[in-house]
Length: 354
Image (tube, rainbow, N blue to C red):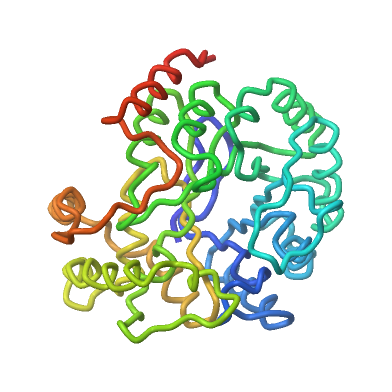
């Protein structure tokens, strides 16, 4: 396992991390739970995985208590990243796939951090992220002043933001980077979904910031196990995807087979190496749901990097939509060619940097 350090910090994380969303929300039916999940987390640490990412709303606290159960006696060996900002205390109910009311006021965030620390059984968090922030939260100086106060008190080592599609995305991400809101952020990025990374990485290279990358396998497509007959059970978050997402995705994945180098890599490993080709990608957070997959994906960090020729071939495929005529899957972001997109870009120029 190799490790990377967020720019300008002492926050060092494993290139392959473990997001406990899969284990604790019930939205990914193949995953482990209970004692089996704790065993899986401990095996991950034994394999060199040190970053474990969670949130207070994952299982209404279960995503944090499971880390306490797994690592209560090895706290100094792990890096715990959590998130806050959703009011699960007045709006419980983790089973519904819906967005709950948010509260990013200083008083609520302090309360949320204290509650997370209790559930985790620790007195500090390594990396705390504002969960699915909107622009008004990015611009709220008192919110980040409170996070800095918590850092000065030793309750947070570092803090940043986590971006959510259709909630807060490109504009919010660039603004957070320009205003130096923390040391890093979490976003979706993979071979098939390269926005907002294509916009945020250049900004981060200029202003500083590191990234945690979630959904590096495009909700499982890039693990290489789906077929045209694949179906998803009720409650599975992938069930809400249009059928075209699966069928078009399979056509794209077939064109990426060259990345496996004739079987030297699995497609899942190649997908992680693609993400890690960007130096500002500090860690990938694949969906890990059993021991065999954990061992496969953790080993990706030890494989030779993708070559410039391989990366160039991917860029050509992506630029040409893999030769597939489809409506682009759009989240909330900037469309530079549109009048609205131009207005947003001009707005970003007016957001003061620090």
